[in-house]
Image (cartoon, rainbow, N blue to C red):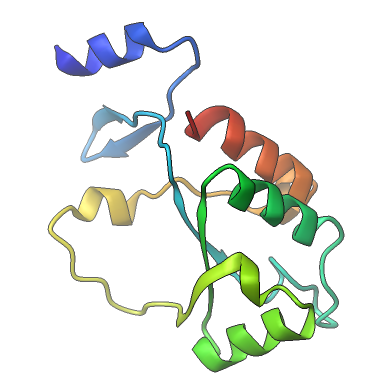
Length: 136
């Protein structure tokens, strides 16, 4: 009952997660923690920064998001790429992409809100969607 009250009070469509067949409404966040992959997300196959990435990430930071850069190649590699493109100040941390996650709320980890910059068309489109759908 409380979930429907949250949805009724919001003028925006709230995102939902599916966990074992149960639909869970996700309330809009004030300060989203966003983990961004390096290869083929932030940079292309030639390690060139994807067009519009820096500007889109700055918009997210300006709206209160907390950005973390991660990579299967490790935290040092993630930091190196951020430094190469003078973006270290946008990120609060640099981490290796996890192989195993231990968490008391597995539904929020196993069914995260996920965007693929390549499928969305641009970094601007990703930032616009996050700001519209997930932030107060």
